Image (cartoon, rainbow, N blue to C red):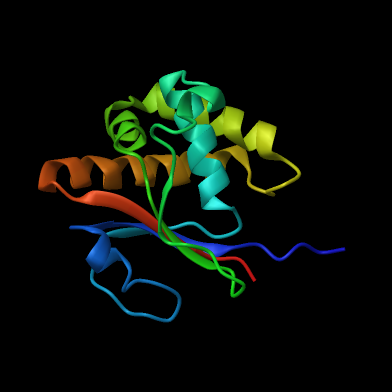
Length: 147
């Protein structure tokens, strides 16, 4: 059985009212990093644990992902990435990002078929986007569609 994977992208926007206008088939000019073949909400929570040392229990009710467009039956959602994760991505050095990406890639298989090299590339691009967001005082969001 082949599992249909999500398509989407992490992007920077000024605020929620702007972020809701982004999605599949909608052109935009926001700085963005595509994230195909993963479920970015699950991945973001795991990255936060790996980069900050917080446990999933620590995140309950505090700095979890916040829905901007809640997922409905159509499989589309937009969520805000917690500032704690955006900052952790932006300040993580190359070695920390690589270690995080490799551990994530190894622990998420077979849910995602992402190689450690692809995971490293994704987190490096995402870290650069997060740093740009902090520099420009923009929030980090993600939209994805999981049919």
